Length: 123
Image (tube, rainbow, N blue to C red; front, side):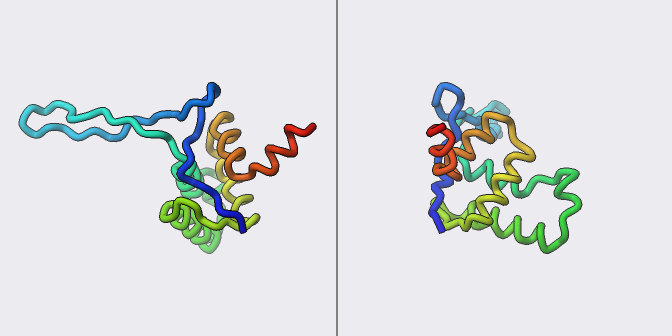
């Protein structure tokens, strides 16, 4: 089972990390924003969000299938480099493909399955 680094950032079309704005807090005294902190959008977030998403397709899953997705999402959430089986990688890729944009799918697949990306570039 390969170890997948889920703390890698998702890159934009220029190869730069996609940034997201963290939720801000309000200063109680002045009712103004304390900060607009930005961080990299990580593969971990893409995986956990996609595995947890409720769609028409996932609403038809059994309780056991939802449980397995939840357990996999928790594993990814808790580890920077979880060991993932081929079946788990396939499930993650399917979930990402169902809910994410073309760019995010491409970048996530490149990290999740680098051998597949290498095969395509050989053609």
